[in-house]
Length: 251
Image (cartoon, rainbow, N blue to C red):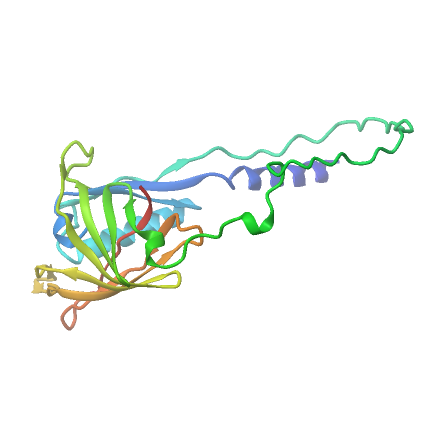
């Protein structure tokens, strides 16, 4: 009995942590020049170590471009959220089985009204083509607008927070993606109009202006866009630099 109780306790502990997630807030007073907003939330992550790793990675990426090390980038500690899912307690004594009384078999009732059951051919699949993603999208601190012209896709940043509490906003209305939709993939470039100057170990390691390849994936139900990192060119001996547009949801 002690062995059984120990196993049940271990299972309960494992299940209890399954629904707890971790995330962290950040704000950056100088990140607008990097094509990012001024603040946001990253997560959720399935463990505290994964959250701390993402927090360190974001800080290191921005530090390599002159927006880290406590100068203008500030990442808050990882915090846990969610409620643990506890399994129901086992029954101490099982109830005796009851014999069901004999019953008369009744034929199922047929309801001819068409609004009771939807036929399979009446269920509409998600829209296809670039028009399926046109309109407004958002992340935790910015609004974007997807504009379609023929087969071309342009995404503009139309509103973003200037302060961590979002009491001050700016409306740049500038492009952040130019490309096209191929199936569920957005393939194109991130335009950066100004060169970004930074230093690493006392040597200049800035990134030039230009258009840099980036890719995003549209979810099957057309409700989210997950962007991959765009790699930026740097000088020889400089740490690699990348930027990401994050994850967007329908506005």
